[in-house]
Image (cartoon, rainbow over all chains, first blue to last red; front, side, top):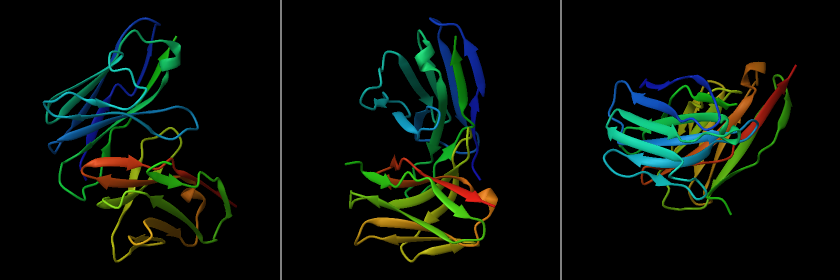
Length: 116
Length: 108
């Protein structure tokens, strides 16, 4: 099946710094990528949807200036957590779809972010 | 009301039993449907797509009822390894709408 590579798989950073997470589709062109956040024992929460070459659409309550999403090519999307704080510590997962109807979503391995 | 709703569980089921759970969706324009499985601290993985005619994959059977707007997942002869959270996903105009998941715990 299709592969989505996400890295880093885990990162520890100091409060106030920025962290960039990359999500790459390795063998297909991802017209749409999704970024999720998942807190312990909770479900996936969609943060934003990004289409290649256009601005991301953020879900209500997600600060677009804090969570910068760039989808510059059909195989790469990045999420930058700016000025991270301990409450941003979470599991961040990207997924991508190829753009055809009835296609499944392929997930990256997730990034566990810990802000200290 | 959420667009995709699932009973969060947990469902505590003895090994070998049959368990079923449903997922309801509110938008009739929904086009395709999936069940994903998520293990603790891991990314979701596709379990199976759900087709209008219903489909089976080993011990797993998925069904779609468009009239009543729900999909179901049936697991027969449950194994300890089936313990996970099962996520219902609806694709509507290339937007994926996720249920909150149903937690399943299989007990020996």
